[in-house]
Length: 186
Picture (cartoon, rainbow, N blue to C red):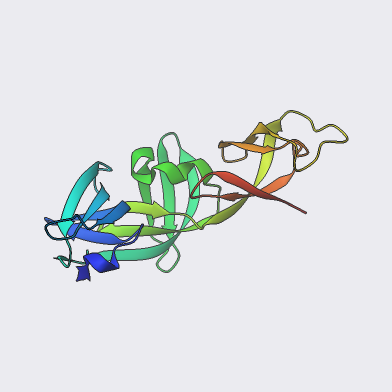
């Protein structure tokens, strides 16, 4: 059981038999009346975001989620094939089930898949991935790290902003949580 004092972004809770992840929260102490916590929670089953208010000190169930280490094998149209690293069992997920992480998926990438009642409900990528730039405007001599940015398409198909000195073929480190360029790799 979780208390409202333990709330943080990314915490997974169960409400009315449905698993949710806390997207945002705010502790509120009004001038009169009891304190409460205002939250935005996202359903792991449907992806719907709800505004929910909890009384301070209220306790919520921990969802019965099973986390499995899996490897992304390939994409077939709008289906994504993943393989369990322990049992070698393969599952197919739709693009909707994979969600936002599909922008940074490359073959053989290890990731975590959350299961609720034996059904996959969420895919979690590592915080950082290394990807090659496949399309961008050419860099010009004299362009520096501090002088602006340009769009670049990565091998996974994601479009991000990179510094002007990045060229096609360069490998870059990207934060998968925000989609922001971190650094060029050697």
